[in-house]
Length: 201
Image (cartoon, rainbow, N blue to C red; front, side, top):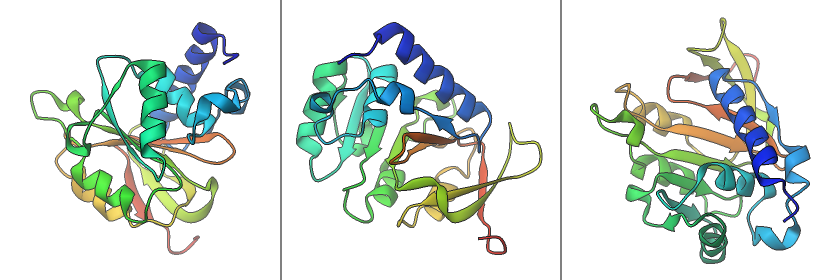
């Protein structure tokens, strides 16, 4: 791996924070992803691996949804020391693009939503998608958004309603990060309200 671990992962973290604080802002991870060598990926996209390297350590657990779940989990564990576990216990759930249909909805339903005393113990869900600039039109509202923000997601999953149900008792809920094939990142924190934009979509 040719990453400058400190510098490049700090850059990834800053972009993640920017996109999370301003939902609808697309962050570009192409520069950092280009530094991740093919042999390090083991079925995982370079940008998803970057997020794992940025956020995971031996204190956290994760669950991978993929046809290559075992090999991807082994790679992430070797690089970060984070521990694979079942969906209901995982701090991070990773839905790879080759995951079976319905995996995202399953992950949302099973993900930890935190507790009223400790809402921060909820899960993050990372999702590989075809595109975060094309596909179904979604209208975003909430903190960090001036009025409304229009985004697009190319993903063949029924997830908006499941997420809405999971996040109905704020501050409980889940945060979601979408990454596409061009290493573009879209963050949808639990505070963001999503509606399907039938008119413009």
